[in-house]
Picture (cartoon, rainbow, N blue to C red):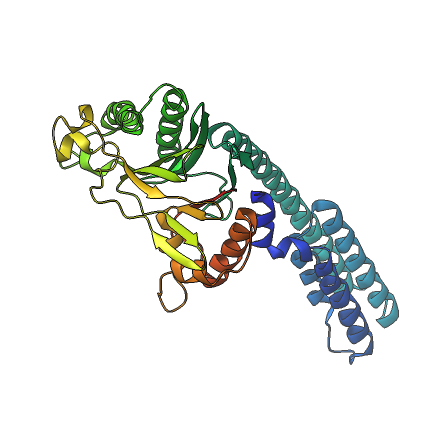
Length: 378
């Protein structure tokens, strides 16, 4: 799903940039007419300075300079109609307006340069996302799927949430996870998990072995990243990654699931929503040795659930269910999922994205949110 389209939906201001030009032009016209018709002891010319200043807040240097020139021309017209362009009072107003127009045009130029730098940074972020968080194929074996990533920060493109899919000779393996924390450090931890998953998903015959491999790859990296804080307290317990790892075989209408402290997948079947809660959840990745020493070397138990033709399974991160509205109410994901009447994973995610952003209207998401919808075809 196109993140740039979603971000544009969250930034309607840029669509109105050209329409905003009507405001300074109307201001110049009103001040000019008002100043000409005003009594001789009333001077409205100084208000013309607001036109280029207002334009500089949303337009580039060329348009700002043009509006400034129109304002200066209007001031000259007022001076010639009311007295003379060489009148001291009007001369001071004209010179002041020229200087201010030059300054705000310069500021508009600097702002435009800054905006171009931000655009380049966003392009780099998008490129990094395509490398780290590769888009899922729409069709993998007997599965049809779609994915979406919503960053908590409006200008961000990637964070600590992650998902991936790998095709094996016997089925499809899926991963969804959430790195504790934000920023570049979270992106780096997500890259480690995704790299380990892609490297081992084809090699480990059992799902339990795959999760053990992920734990072995993640734990040293997280421990190396943890250092003692200013008070000398070891913060190793503060770094972890929740994850759900699934194995969907081609020849059986079931799925295997190992849940490492992650929100349970939701299965939509015949208008009913079924939570895939495991009996024995594993600790989040990176915490196994702290919770129970030696656990990382043991087998992570995989539990089996029915996954029939026509079922749609939703994988998600806690940024979805922790989104709040104006009253502080969490987003009711299961309830909204049960009310959905569509027929495809892409339509489901489009509906949930619109509904989630509407639920959190006026607020940024408290955390990054990722969703993956998978349908088993007949």
